[in-house]
Image 1 (cartoon, helix red, strand yellow):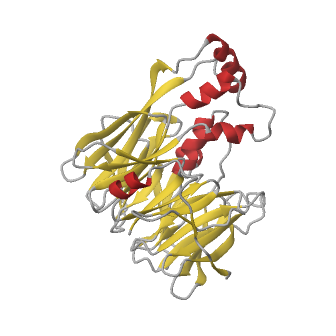
Image 2 (cartoon, helix red, strand yellow):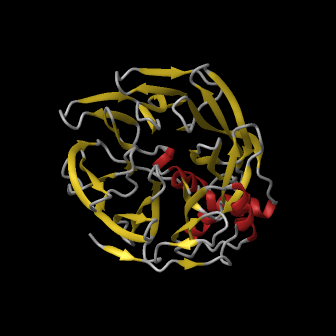
Image 3 (cartoon, helix red, strand yellow):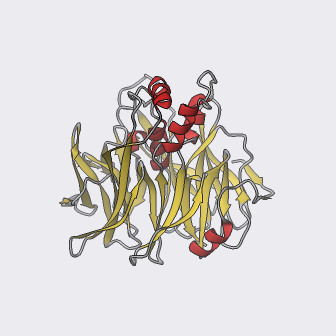
Length: 409
């Protein structure tokens, strides 16, 4: 394993976020996020800390250990080969955990923060239809990895989108089409995604017995490791999507009635409530000029018109089956969500495409540039918010910070 000591670069001026606001609204928490193609840490009343050297092509799948002492993330090189890294806050060191990590694959820590769970893909492309991957744990105390099992995750992902907002949304949810995958060790076995995140299974690592949990996607494991929440649906019918909770001891699945179609879901700080997001295309169009209309049609192929989207967050109490809308905004989508023990929800929000359409309409986006599509994605802002769940308003804590993850300080 490669272990590197980093001199942390302290920088403020290059960021478009207000650090005093961050310090006030994020008291007691540390945010890890990607900015300007590096991973940075933001803590209240402290300068930002850069923990990577900018040599990677991209970073993804940022996740903190439960105790907030370690951060894992995936770095992609120019050929999109993925390497898993572990940052230790105690000594500001980086450890290379493993290569041959499937790009975009999930990583997680065990509940006691002692082990990192990840996968490696050593099967040549096209050599099998089942797509087996090896599952490993990495011991944080000894810096050693051990293979614990091999699973078949099924068919891969395909397709794409010409609309930059979709790529922002997919990046912020760590999943193609918004369907992120799960890979977590629980007291009842390994919960993992199959078929590009469209279905989920529970594997007893000791016996090899596997139980299908069905067509449940976008899964989140409860803080106590006894339940999993996700979204179940009929194949090809997004309007059929429902919240679902799985009891991992029995495998029983319970669907929940909600007033809106769920999109993403996470657990509250305890295992008694869920927080889920929704997104809905409205009848309203983003206004443009006649000249811009033609340019937008040429670039995006949208007949020159782009709809405004509305997004919301709901709080679902599992004891009372009570559903409460706690946030509503004109936004293309809600990205990642993370509940804290202080009664707040931290989340990312993908803006509607006003800034993108303005740039296209003004002719400032050079479509002949090979980097034009990346530039167009960057014109769809990502905003970070903290939302007190006591009914107070959400507070903006930063912009131009992607792939965020929050830990206790």
